[in-house]
Length: 557
Figure 1 (cartoon, rainbow, N blue to C red):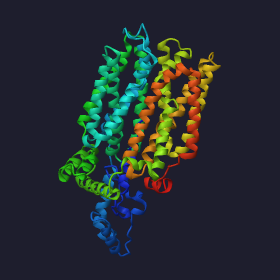
Figure 2: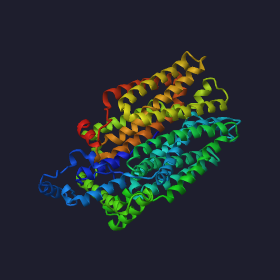
Figure 3: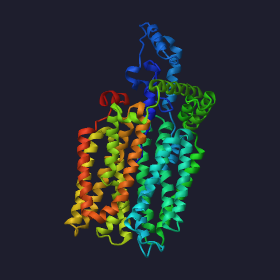
Figure 4: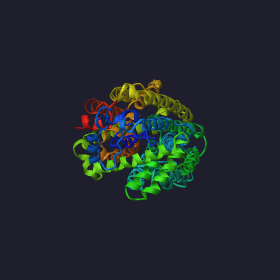
């Protein structure tokens, strides 16, 4: 899964509900990553110099006791200070941004690494010559557990994240994920038997679930608004880079006795770097303020901690006065959002009204993302290539590296073009390519088995089509489509749907292959892909250029 880039819109949605009233010259971006007030539509007001501002001021004050209202009547001195603040807020330095992005993104890289490494490890583990064990003769069910064990763990990790994430905070959640990555890698690498191997896979998977929840939140809440979208998209590239890295390690160790141990265990030192790096980073300023608003900490103490954290994250280009003002604005924003929501939506509200429509769109996309065969194609890429004529395990592993490079390239295309081309065109074209590639794989196993380039070409087409459609856009749509009231629970259900269907398809692939044969299984996936194409055409809206409020008011009503 590319869980990548999933949740930046949570912060943007809350920010869009800020009731600060600013005239045009004072509109600026907050270092905490909230929207410019110019994006607030009808909620932003401009009081002209010739008009009496008092009625507006009285109405605004009646609407919210904490509103900060500024008008041109405040004088040129205040305007000068506002312009200076605007310039300070707009400026940012790349140097302090790199590490707060890099260390959380390692959580995505380690998820991708597991996908790539498992592809080669399943071959090594089953070989009498290469496994280095006496229990190498695994049934199709046991092999399915090895491949999908980390995904079952990720499913549990997603449920755990829903329960403890706000208590721990994004930073500690990611440190915990890194520790679980280390434990899972070491237990798997040194596993003396099959049962211990599965325990290690489950531990690693719980780390995946926590990392895929915490990483996008931390990046979104700590990135400057000017580059937040780029950084969230780059996290998807880190997942793909991890897959490629897993293929590479698999290729290097595929001919080594017990090579699967090295493939699984190599993630431990990378996870240690992530753990140390996250420990040195500050907590999310927005999380500190959220805890204060929830009554889980002193408002003044948490404000001071948030300013200090924001200073670390922004460097020295922004003054203490600007930081303090933006911290105050964010507190007002959070309180206003809580007041508007009344109380957090319960789980059943997801299945009512606008939330149900959003869940059908978002949940349907992440479901079809998996049941069109994506986990099987990735986890069993080396095995598919072996049956396509690359008989040596090392040959199949090397071709997997080329597929990983192509995947990386196509992900880059999607990242930089989604806001130009739009969501629907990329989804429709990509899903159509997925269906074609799956039917080509079915044809190869049925009638074209003397043409191995057909299998390789179909795999490349599948990877390219997936990476410009289901890969990045499903999670982008999930982050955009849910109403604010049920967004947290809605995204939680989407994550559970994704990991659950991913684990199910990965586990079922080998048994189904034995029952149906490869030709029929890929034909089945192709038929599901056609169904998903119809779903996209009839159900999924175009959200390009729309604010979150416009999506909720125009599309979900």
